[in-house]
Image 1 (spheres, rainbow, N blue to C red):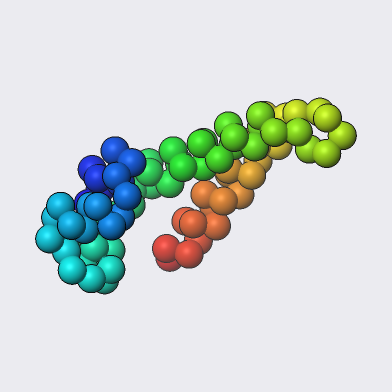
Image 2: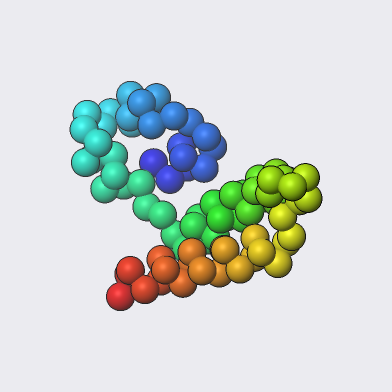
Length: 80
């Protein structure tokens, strides 16, 4: 499942290809690592830094980096 998700295959297609009939079985094997979470946050940061913040200025990388660090620390805390 992890490779399907990394490749961008939709969940419904991945379930058909793998033979998983329920979401719970799919989720059991859709393992998310810390690296996956960090990559997801990098993608969000890249997207939001390219958008304007309302006054036409781009968001700074330091703000995006701070958001990523906050999100990752929240994830770490929830796993304890």
